[in-house]
Length: 420
Image 1 (tube, rainbow, N blue to C red):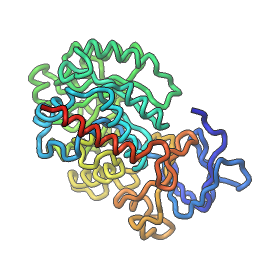
Image 2: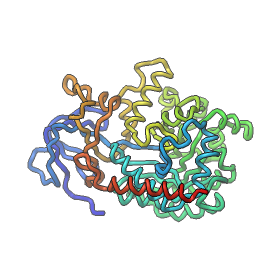
Image 3: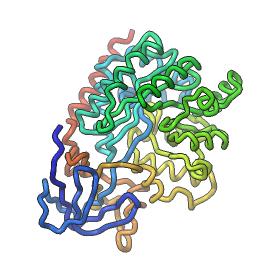
Image 4: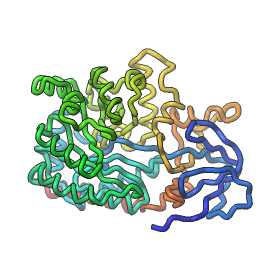
């Protein structure tokens, strides 16, 4: 896909930069992700009236199961995590095929774009299918191929899954928008041998590992009873807690485990809506992570386990509220801090509708924009990735939303028609 050479110009607008500082006037958004002030005489792809637009970096969703859009949003509502997995998710996923994954991933990508998100760190079966969907849509992704010793419908064994995944990992290029990773499910679905092999493959291909960790007290207690270590400690002991390892949930952890994450350069992903919907009894506690210097991101988990679907803006709001609530501290995780976490290291741009009633009042000198956006929400109007408009004026261009929704409903109906 050719990358445009020229920038797009927004006039009379408001832009929030990477340090959450506000800039007003005419700006250029460059294909390489930079922004500059416009003099008005540059060659541009398009000039857009920005009076009713707020320009920000795009959102980044660091823990997803995109094709779970196939599962209704109230799917197995009311189940605790392990019953949810054993009685609802694993039996359903046993009949997955590439066509179902493609349909679910495309609908998910459309939802991401509609809500201002251009990146997803995914873990789901048939990763090459999800990677292709994100690539075709012009989006970014860290797409993990699942590895586990059971509940693995795409392969006969974890070893077979790893062999197939190596082929994808070998295609990784630093300049690709979509990178592949190893999605080792968890310490309770992966044997020590499987985790060790996953670590060896990751090291051989300079790839990342994405894993659920310390999501529930039961997981923690079971791991300690079996190994004498808590889950993060166990990953460290096995040598798979490394720079770039993505630890989803990381709710029930010891402070020494958090220090291990910091020393390793791992990333922890705060997923409050999933933890709360599944009544895991706790969510990631931010203060010790920040004190240790751990890189913390936000993730929505899958549509079947998240009350907010793939809306990372809603997840940022909930993350802010739950941190304040849990720590009895109204100063924690301000809207500005929550938005910074949600957009950290984004290379892309989105615009939000300042004419949306939820963005009013604008406040003195527009000082309420981020608070309104995080706590109230707003319609996403434009999405720009590498100079390409994936969404313009509130309509997604990269994916036909209606066709994606129709295909999703047809796939779900087809699935249930085939269930005896």
